[in-house]
Amino acid sequence: MSTDVPALVGVDWLHQRLGEPGLRVLDTTAWLRLGDDRTVRFDSGREAWAAGHIPTASFVDLIDELSAPNSPLPFTVPAADRFAAAMSRLGVGPGTHVVAYDAESGMWATRLWWLLRLFGFDAVSVLDGGLTAWRAADLPVTTDPPVPPAAPAPPFVAAPRPELLATTAQVRQRLAEPAGWLVSALPEEIHRGGGPQTAARPGHIPGARSVPASDLVDPSTGRLRPTEQLRARFAAAGVSTEAPVVTYCGGGIAATLDAFALNLLGRHDVAVYDGSVIEWAAHPELPLEVG
Image (tube, rainbow, N blue to C red; front, side):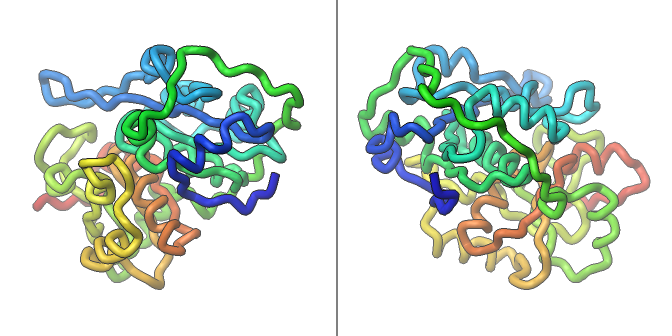
C-alpha cells in the first residue's frame, strides 16, 4: 500500500474502505477525568471499545502499552523496540495504512498519529470527528473483535525521527528566541495558571503562544475546523511561520492535536515537547509565567 495517504479522512471515506487488506483501524480512546479535588486522572477506553467500536477496529492502549513503563511522567514516549513490538502485535507494518480514531476530542488519535511518525511510519490518517462523527452518520458499530488479517504484515521496524520530539533541555535553550516558536495547547485558564492543574506549579512556559487544542475542534460535530479557520487561529496567536515550532500541553497529548493541525497547514516538522509542563514545572529553577 502506498504511503501517500491523507492525514485526515472522513467517515464516508473510511466506511467505503473497511475490509481492505492493508487497512488497520485503531481505537485510541482514553478518558481525561477531573477528580473532586480538581486533580486530573486518565482512564483506559478499552471498556468503551468493547461496548461498541468501528468494525475491524483494534484497541490501542496509549496509557500503558504505548508509554514508557516506570516513567515518573504520564505518557512518556516508549523505547523504539517497545513501540515496534506493540505495532507488530496490532498488525501494523510495511504495506499497511493506519486510521486512528477516538471517542473523545481527537487528541488521543493524534497522539498515535504523532507516535507513528516519530518512529518513521507515515501511512497514518486520523478519522475526522472520530467515533462521534461515525455514530452521527448512522454507520455501523460492533462489539466483535477484529479478525486477524489473512496475510499478516511484516514486523514494524522503527526508524526514529528525533527532530519531532522536543526535550526540556531543547526548550530551555530556545527561551531567548523571539516568541512564536512555542505553542501551548492547554485550555486558556490552565495556560494562565488557573483551573485544575496536573503540574507541580501553575502557569505557562515563558513566551508560549496560547492555542488551546479545544479551539481547533468544532464542538457541535467533534470535527476539526476548516483549514482556513485553523490557519487564522494560529496566525492570530502569533505562531511563527518560519522558526521550527514546538507544541506542549500538560502531558504531551493535547499538544499532538496542535501539531496535527499545523501539519494540515503544511508544517510537517513540528516537534512535540513530550514531558510538557508536568516535566517543566518539576524543575523549580525553570521559569513559569502566570496570567
